[in-house]
Image (cartoon, rainbow, N blue to C red; front, top):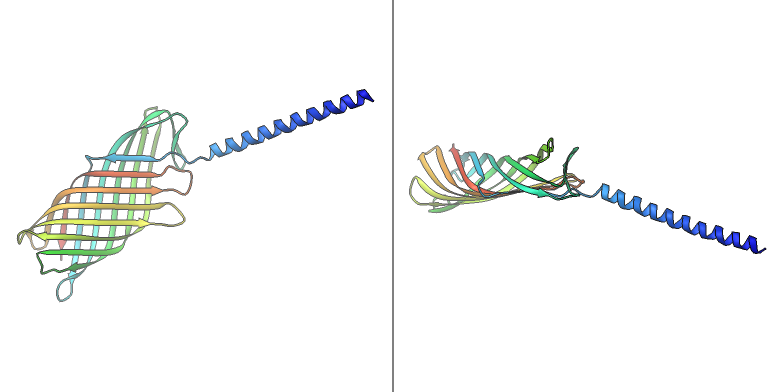
Amino acid sequence: MGWIAQRGILHGAQARHAAWLALCLCTAGIVGGCQGTTKAVPIDISDDEASALDARSIWRFGSRQDHGVEVDFAQQRGSSSSSLGAGSRVMVGSQVINGPQTLHNEATVRSFHVAYNYLIAPSSPVEAEAFAGVGRMELKLLAQGSAPGAQISSTLGGGIGVIGIGPRWKLREQLALEGRLTWMGRVSSGPEYEKQSIDLALAYRPVKQMTLRAGYFWLKATVEHDSNDSDVSVWLRGPFLGVTLNF
């Protein structure tokens, strides 16, 4: 009887040890699975020496020429470097760069929109353009690591809505100081795209149908994924050149 009781105690202890081992393995599997699906770290690009181009056409109509349709194309480019720590990764689709290494990131932000344009107080020395419409935003991303073959190249973006306002202070008949605040955004079940920009420029109109602009811009563009891909954040600042054709 004593031998049987001792053997039963031994089997009980083995069962407890087996249960603890199974629990530890299960926990390790869950943790490993969570680590395998952890969202990749963001890709941040910040450049205060970026450059930009903007081309715009506006067709005016109405008795006061205060209604119009505008078509606008803009492009901003910048780059910066960052460090990717050990155990971290950046990822877009099937393209992955694992740390530790140094990243050189480049971004080209392009946007195109068609919008209704309403000119506020056109006969005043200070006027403003309010606009709203639809368009498309594209963010061309290139991330290169210091390790051989470590590279991500992708174009992100899609259809997007746009609203904005642009005040103008007429200094002379052919010379004006212009500003423009633009917001473009898209929220859907997929990635979220957003672009915010501010332009300040000196505008010169050599002929009635053309305005040349030169100034400084600030841009924030973001792409937020609902998957494990890296979110992308772009902050650019720098000089820009633009042209507007008036019809």
